[in-house]
Length: 254
Image (cartoon, rainbow, N blue to C red; front, side, top):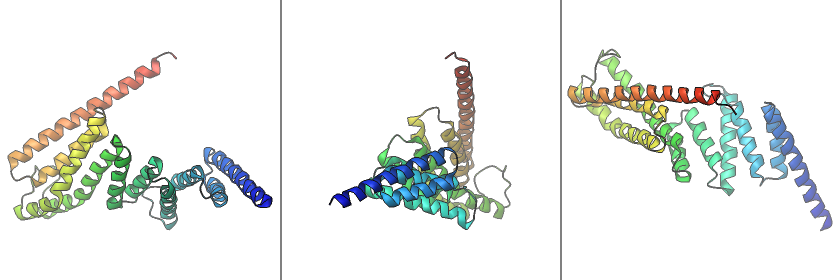
């Protein structure tokens, strides 16, 4: 019994040493070495949440969004698997849930990103970034179809909404109107949390402006474009006010 206890104590000590060495490597930006140290710590102490969270984050640091290589996607996959392991024992771990949501978004797996951002909101209903991302996803899924429709109808980007062909417009409206509307609602929820959040203002502009292509009349489309223009101005004002506050804070004596 004493030998078993001593072996367990030694394993914990060695795991802690690997964790500390991994943290040092992580802080130095040596993420490959950090991963090796954190993996060693986890192997010795599989229930160490700190080691698992650091390991997942070290994988994230090596992942480059948009780089379509097998190695790069491997980092994302490993990070997701590691954070899922955290959630097996801590289902409401905010960092793990947010990290998975972000990784799926960067992988352009929008269905999974939507699901995981909803999980973020279940843990933290005041998370403005999750609402913002849900709005971005709605716009991202529509933009390609809208541009293709305009090309087929020989409409230039600057040509006013809505789409000319009522059949095509109706088809796209049936598929995308609800998700675009929900995207608008989510950006408004983000602004209810932070009225100065210019990112949501910018995407309210995009969501409303592009959804205007699905409007039933030119008058309705013109009204939507006018509302979108108003959000552009609000976003610019918010950016200027933010820059002014930052400049003022930098001049304030400490």
